[in-house]
Length: 247
Image 1 (tube, rainbow, N blue to C red):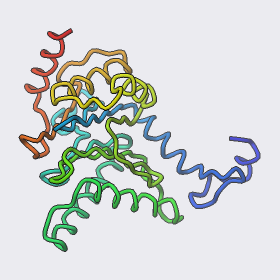
Image 2 (tube, rainbow, N blue to C red; image 1 turned 60 degrees about the vertical axis):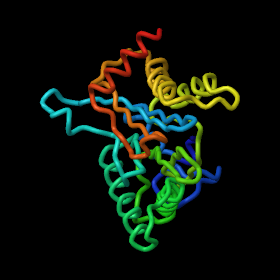
Image 3 (cartoon, rainbow, N blue to C red; image 1 turned 90 degrees about the vertical axis):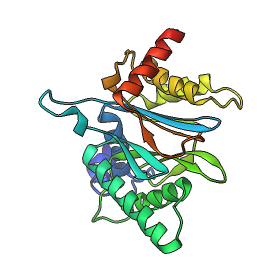
Image 4 (cartoon, rainbow, N blue to C red; image 1 turned 180 degrees about the horizontal axis):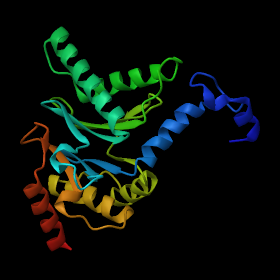
């Protein structure tokens, strides 16, 4: 950022472009996501979709069971929120409201792509109006579509959204992207076990850390069980043991 832009105060307003054509407040919202210090990964398989994220309990006095970044939105859709916790909870609440309204109006559940589009549209409005600020959070949505199978979408503070085979958000997201690109060459579609293994190995490789069950949160949707399912500590432990034995 040039001194001229800073002194002119272009980063003080959400709605004003700088002479270089940038919206600094929106860019700062992306920085807030990385600065939160958590990394999340989503992987879509042949008949499954998986999200995994770090679990950091900031204080020893906090009850660990009350700290989470993975949320259920509808029985078939869930998400992992990366970035500022309060902003994340606010967006989850809005997503649940939008999903409930959609079902009330139309008589059937909203699909993951429609919900991702709706949340991205709401985020985009936040970049236009001066009385709201962009939310410093990225939402990775997973769901099961009756017609199209496993769904993986990501939205960001600028209002962009897209479907992915695999994606990452948060600190070191670029390193995670590079790792996932290397591992998912061609059109190969991992099984449920492989997708969980890929998500965990991506986190442990880019963060150079080995994880215990209490350091991770994982959620899965499969063809056999299209309900959004958050893995318990025992289930995560079993998966980590299986991955360790494979190595």
